[in-house]
Length: 294
Image (cartoon, rainbow, N blue to C red; front, side):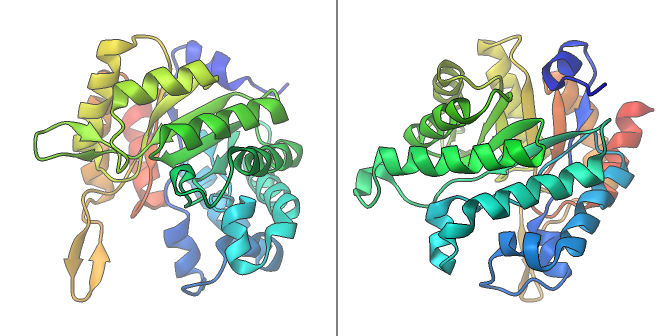
């Protein structure tokens, strides 16, 4: 019998998610400017290998190769008509890798457009996210992860669309930066507290943050959220530290041991699901699993 994600979290078990996908896709040969989600059809075995690599590392949850698979983003590649096919394939690949005893969260990223600019309507965004969520659910996802958000209006529309599309639990994570004054804000000026209130009201069951920060800053974000909400599950996907520029390329400096060394503090701060974002690999996840599971 398939497990229930929210019930598993409520049982008190700390869940370990996966790490970066984009990093590994590029290592597998994805070219700059190429559509990553198209690989679900053209390089299915390579995408499966990434998903299976995280399962073999011990992930309880893996995401899907569908971060940019909304019609707005896909239109940049002339692939908006493949929205359903690409998302369904993304979920089915991760489902195949996860089997029935691990969880799959369908990844839904931002569109890259702002409502305030008037280039897209709320209705267009809603229908696009709804189409994506329906396809991810059909492909076998156990839940949806609306991630890397910075604007409240887009996040709320995505959650509402996902709820209209299916009955799966929804996680919503924002990307925060620390301001000169020491406060965390998104690029649109949203605070963790504002995010918390808006996404819970819209219907998200899991809140949190991804990208932009390593564990050090993520611990601060979790503590801030826990001063306002003691019970809602928190998901954290942290980068492998703050990026640095070395030898002409961007490098994320934290090793698997570095991240594993901070994961207990992150959990003790109140995180329920922990995993990685930019710069993290199956080795990072494996180190976290060993630390958490003992």
